[in-house]
Length: 161
Image 1 (cartoon, rainbow, N blue to C red):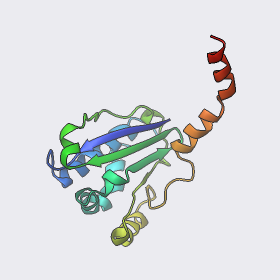
Image 2 (tube, one colour):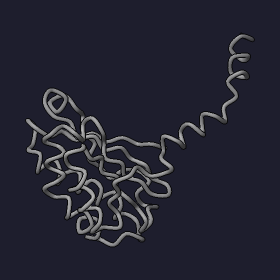
Image 3 (cartoon, one colour):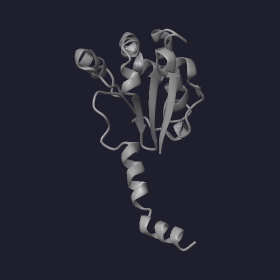
């Protein structure tokens, strides 16, 4: 199941603070699992510290969210600015499904053209930072699960009433 989280940035909090909130949310989620040691998530994402803030400041994580992915976990994390940041209802609690995370989790970082090299450099230093979206995302899983519903049967059910 694809889950969503939205984090407020400027003017609610600075881009740097919003990045710290996102990293803490990811760590709080994944480190509930016995397979993910405490402190490892923040260490893995450390190469993105300044870059994450730059992506937020430029509005790039509003248009293209981060994607946290693992065997049983797919989460879009969107970081919004301006008016959207003032009206968003944040849920910064650990994301359901994190307790079953594996040590193979990955965080896809969308990169605008002018930051592609910087994102690739950061990803080169971590086995958990991805520059390409995962091959199997929750979006695909959601599509597959909806394919198992017999829409003709549902329509027929509705017409029988």
